[in-house]
Length: 253
Image (cartoon, rainbow, N blue to C red; front, side, top):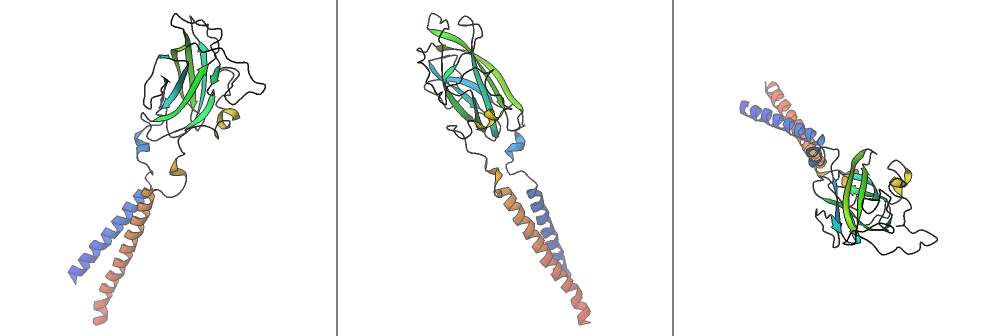
């Protein structure tokens, strides 16, 4: 009888322990890697000429068509504001308009960020009036401002590079197309305006899908519930058996 009660007490302890493990599992984040990467100014931007590489490959000299690539930004919706200015000897900090590519758009970061490619935006610039060097290149500065989904500034950097002088820009159509942007970064919609947050959200190409954490029960949460209920059920069964074993000698007497 004592051995049976001892085994019952051990099973009761095990059931309670299993329930505690399940409860602890429910309090853990669905993706433990989120806690390993501190939030903040994570991410970087590089310039890549054609053909575009999938990995980091910053190029200080590019052709008429090039891309700005965004790497390693935190998970969530990031808003980018991009502008270009002519640098000496090609110009004196005068705005340079893109004829291809957007000056404001959103893209999705990922977890963990690392060196993951988040977004690529292709550009061609209107270099009319800029002074080229003896290789036919013009000196340009890229200005990139990125804000996170909370509206906080996550990234603001400048990059200076040389690009080939593009052919003259054709006369603009009466109705500007989606890639024609009057004004540089100073006139572009800022991160706090409605245009920066919504104008390109539905039409951005090649953006990553939104995080799956918004709906459903994560695997960690599901395992926690299973362990919690299994432990409590085992503890309840053992407790009933122990009470029966305590009462049985009294009845026999």
